[in-house]
Image 1 (tube, rainbow, N blue to C red):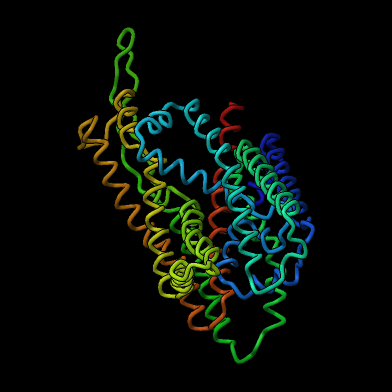
Image 2 (image 1 turned 90 degrees about the vertical axis):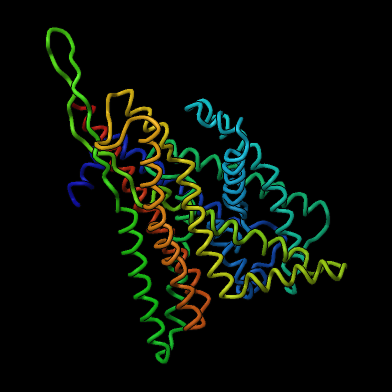
Length: 425
C-alpha cells in the first residue's frame, strides 16, 4: 500500500492529476455553500425531511438542492442528456454510426450532450422552483417573475459550470468527473449524517443500528467482489513467418471480461429514472383538473411505496447494467481486431462465431453482476422497512456509489502508473 502511495507521489502526471481533481472537488463544495437569494433555508430543509423522493434527488445532485445553492441541480441535467443520447444511439442507426466513428464521433456526441444540457437545466430548474412554490412550506420569500428568471438563469449557469469541471476531471484520467462530483457531495454530508445519528441514538434500537452496520459491510464487500471479479477468455496468437525463416507470434494470453463492466453508472442511471416520474408528478399534484391531480398523487404514492420503490430500483439497476455494457462493450469489434492480429479463441472459429461467443459470455456475466448489484442496492431498503428509518435507505445508496467510484478511481490511477512505468522503459 505504501509503495503504491509513493508511486502516486513520484509520478508527476498522476500526482498533478490527483491534486487537480482534489482542488476541483473543493471548488465544487465551496460553490455548493453559496445559497441563492430569496430562499428560506429552514423551510426548505423541513420540506426535504418530509419528502423521501426529494431526499434522493438531493443525493443524486451531489447534495446541492437541499441548500438551493448556485449549483442547485448539480450534474443531474448533464446525466439526463447523456442517458437520452445513449438511448437514441440504440434506436437511431445514424447516431450509432457516429458513435462508432472513433474519437471524432464521440466528440460530436459529447458536444450535442452539452448543448442538450442547457435546455434540460432550464426545464428542471423551472420545475423544481414551481414544485417548491406549491409546497406547504413557505420556501421562497420572493416570487416576482424577475426573481424567478434570475434563479433559473443562475442555476442553469451553475450546471454548465459543473459540467465543465466534470469534463476537466475526466480528462486527467484519474476518475470519472460526474461520479467524482457526486462522490464529493456524499462525502461532504457524511460528518453531518454521523452527527445526527449520534444525537438521535436510542439504545432500544441497538439491533437496528447493528443490522445496518452489517448491511453496510456486506455492501462494501459485495461491490468490491463484483467489481474485481472477471472471466479470463484464453486467446492464442498464431505463429507468423517473417524474413528468412524468423517466426513471430504464437503467444498465449487471455482477454479479461469483468463481471460489472458498467461500474457505478447503472446506479446513477437507475436513480435518475426512478426520480423522474415522481418529481414530475409532484409538479401536478395541485393541478386544477381533478383527474390530473389524482393521477399525479397516485404516481407519488406509488413511488413512495416501499415495495414498488424497492422492486423498481432492483429492476432498473439490472436493466441499466445490461444497457450500459451494450454501449461500452462491442464483441464484433473485438472479434474483428483479434482476427486482424492473428488471434483466436481456442475451439472457436474467428469472425462472427467469436463475436457470438463473447456476447454469450458477457450476457452470463452481466446476469450475475446485475442480480448481485441490484440485491445490494435494495438491502438497505429492507433494513429501512424493519427499522423505520428513511436515512438508512439513502445511506445505502450513498455507500454503493462511494465504494464503486473509489474502486473505479483506484483502477484508473493504477493504469496511469503502469503506463508511465512502461514509457520509462
